[in-house]
Length: 101
Image 1 (cartoon, rainbow, N blue to C red):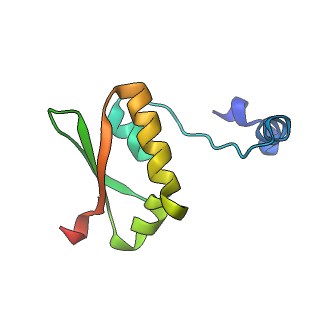
Image 2: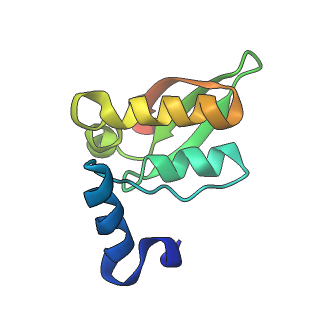
Image 3: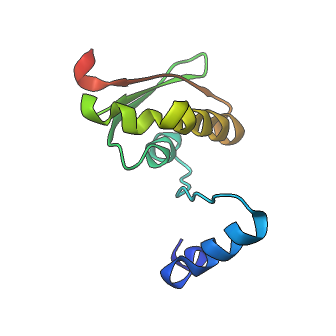
């Protein structure tokens, strides 16, 4: 990912200027649980649970980080749903704090 970002984030800034949009990078992983965890960073994901129907439940480690995982107006969850459906044919149905169970 370092080459894609460029020195001091130069490549990201250039691409952002050309497209006129904010660019976010997520480290891809073949393992769906790891990739989903990467999408919710900097919030710490404790577990990703998959059902047989293709739905996913994401458990965040601490309740204080739940807002961080959800994002402003649910933007982080929407991006995670889109990317999870695109790469793994499953959908995120629930994001909750592990200590709230």
